[in-house]
Structures are given as structure tokens and as C-alpha cells.
Image 1 (cartoon, rainbow, N blue to C red):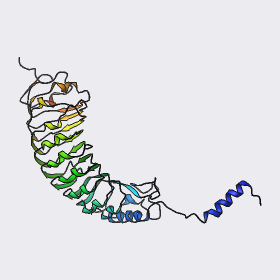
Image 2: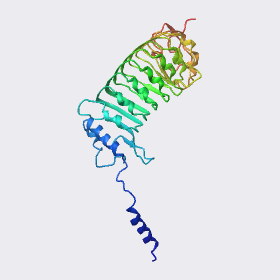
Image 3: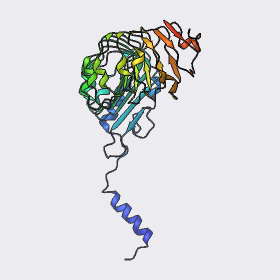
Image 4: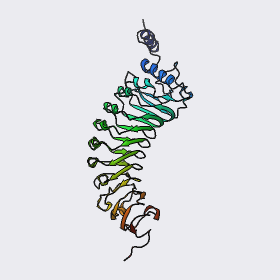
Length: 335
């Protein structure tokens, strides 16, 4: 029997449809169940009203949820939650660690998020980017983070973390940087931090209660960003100054560092240098005037002497309260 082509196509669709299993949504059912548990553990905040159990969690309508749409599994890979209006203080939702394919976890600007990071976070064995910032999360930064060998960045800024820096973090082979600024961390920088992998470029520990000398082993690192300001460090920090690597920012302000600034190298890419309120001495390197990207400089309240490099682009405030610095924008040097 002859069928017109369009009728044949319709027949093929109708006859084969019965044999193709239908799937109403892509979201993995275990992941969806976990997300709904997380919502409940958060106290069902209004900002998560889009997490509707009757809809597909991988259809881009669930706030902060992304899935792997390139494989048939459609597992949840990203959970980015910011500014959650939690009705009352809640602890880190334990169900988050039941998302085995999670690649990115951001919990930011959630003041009612309290308590410690659970040890079960090590179950997130595929996690690459961890950011918990501007919360009231407290307790020590867990050593167990070192068991997540996929981590690339760990950002735990502006929380209530206490205790020492975890020495084991240097064993994470893919780690590219840590930012633990704005906490209440104590103790010294572990010697092991000089063994961070070659990809490690960011060390941000400002605004804590850290103390002691900087391990000389940190000179092995090729850091692009150094943030150690507002602690109680002392001694030598010259290992962070190198002319043969691309260092962008160095912030050592408000410590008790003491070293000869005139003997350090300067990266040609340096764009911010903050050394105020230390005990740094020597003559400012002439190379400072040749750094075309340098837009922030403050060396005030130190023990510096000698002529300020010519063609200074910075005002008097940036050089004030030193032992015997002179030259524009300060008074002229005595001959």
C-alpha cells in the first residue's frame, strides 16, 4: 500500500513513540530530593520559592542551581546561593554534602548562616570552587578540606573562623589560591605553605590575628596576589618581591615587618603596593617610578630614608611619617 511521505513520517512517529521511554524532567531524582532537603534545612526561605517540587531542577528556573547538560546524567554541578533571607540562624545544611557531582559551592552574604563547616564536606570529592563569605560561620577551617583533591580555590572571607591555618592544604595538587581574610585566625603561617603547587598564585590572609615570622619557604612560590595586612607578623617579607614573576598586588600594611626595601626586586606588573605601618627601612627602589601599572602606593609610617624616586605620581600622604624620606612630594633633600 502506498503512503504519502508525510503520512509515512507520522506513522513512524506514532508507532515508535510507544517504544521510546519518556522522561518528563532531566533533574536526577536523588539530586532533586537533596535540594528540597537543603531548602527545608535552610528554613524554606522565600528566595528559594523557585525550588518547586513539581518542576525540573535542571530547567534553569531553580535559583542558583546549574546542572551538567552535556551528559545523560544531568547531575547538579553548581550551587550558588547569595543573599538568602534566612528566617532564623541555621547551621550549614548537612544535605549539601549529598550532591556528589557538585563542582561549585557559593554561600555568600548570609548573616544567619552559623556554626562550623561540617567534616562531611570532604564527601564533595568533585568540588573545585568553594566560597563561603560574609556569613557567621565559625570554628576552625577544617583540615579535612585537603581530602578534596580537586579544589582550585578556597574562599572563606569575612566569617567568624578561629584557630590555626590548616597545614595540610598544601597537599591539594590543583590548588590555585586561598582567601581567608576577615576572620579571627591565630598562630603562624605553616612551613608547609611553601610547598603549594606551581599553580598556586593567591595568598590572602589579611585582617586576622596571625603572628610570627613568614616562613622563608614561601619564597618558592610565584604569587600574583599577597594579602597579609592587619595581622601581627614580624621580620622579613622580602621573599614576596621578585622581578622575574608577574606580581600584581602586595599588601603588608599594619604589621611589624622589618627588611631593607632597597634590596628587593619589583615585578613590572605591580599595580598595588601597601607597606604602611611597619618597620621597613632602606631607600625606596628607583624602579618604583618605572612601574607604569602602579596605581596604589603607600609606604607611610616606616623607617625609610633617602630620595623619593623621581616622577612620583603619589601625594605626600603615601610617604608620610618615615625616618628621613625626602624629595617631592615631601620637602627637598638636604645637600
